[in-house]
Length: 182
Image (cartoon, rainbow, N blue to C red; front, side, top):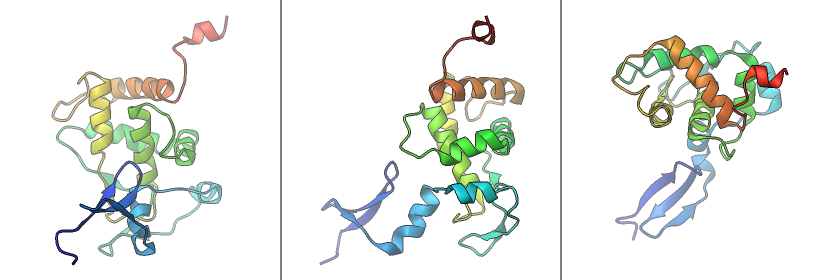
C-alpha cells in the first residue's frame, strides 16, 4: 500500500509531508534533518561560541569547527563568500542573526543571510561546508544582477552594498549619518 508515496520537505517551514496524500509527517527520527535545515541557537549556545573549541562531525564522519566552514564557490562568487565569512565573525552582527528566527519579516537578502550565518555556526551539519545558493540568488535579484553567479565583483563594493541592504532589510531607515546627528 506504500507504493507511489513520497516524502517531501517544505523548505520554508521545515515540515515533512507525504505526497500525493499531502499529510504532514511528524516523526522524531526526522529531527536531525530539521536541525540541519533550520538551525536554532539558545542564548547559552550563542554566549559560548567564541570560547567553544570542540569539533563537530558531519554525516560522513569528517570533523569541522562550527563557524569555520567552507562555502561553495558558485562560479566567481568568491568575493561574496569572503565577505560572508568575514561578517560571520563580527560578534554583534553574528549574534543578531543567530537569535533571529526563520520567521522574521526581513527582506530576502537579510533572511537568507541570517539562514547562512546560522548554518555556518551550526554543529549539526550534514556536510562540513555550506551552500550559499539561496543567499546569492537573493543578492542577484536585489542588486538587479550587479552581483550574480558567473560575474566577478569587488569585495569592497559588495560589502558596502550588503551592509546597506542588511540595514534596510531588518527595518532600518534610509536616513544618512548627517540626518541623525543634526
